[in-house]
Length: 178
Image 1 (cartoon, helix red, strand yellow):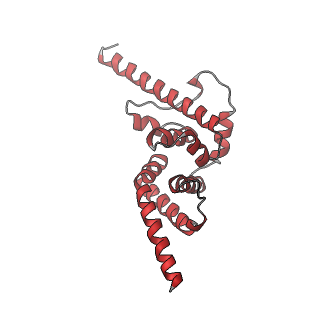
Image 2 (tube, rainbow, N blue to C red):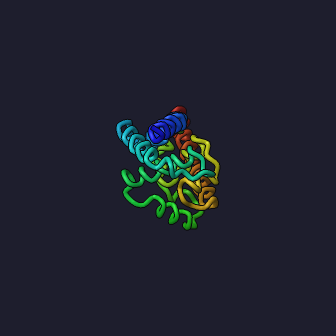
Image 3 (cartoon, rainbow, N blue to C red):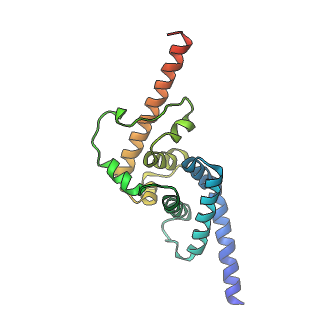
């Protein structure tokens, strides 16, 4: 009887915490996979793994960060063609000055422009600017340094800004018949 009560308490506590994170986690999954079906499957797998490991949560980490770490791991297992962490580290060690080195399709819609960012930049931008995680929390989730997070966000936001400016100039020139 004691074990059943403990199991029920665990289940209720997990459900309460998990429901608070469902929408932001799904939004992130959808932005990363670009597919409703894949996002739903990824969220399901994330919650199954999280529930099984719920007893092992690191006390000072916080449920939301812990859940996003599991999500990142599940995403990398299922959808990342290369190890995202290695791509992030390689990108952080690059020393290039102009953002022409990264080619993306542009869009006047910010959400669409974010989708065209390379995976390693998109993850950082979504976690920071959309989900509201701090640099320290993103570093914990992605398993990289805070300096690398700052670099990724700086590059990602510069690329987005340039992409949106370029698109606006094209719209203006078409509007004026140039």
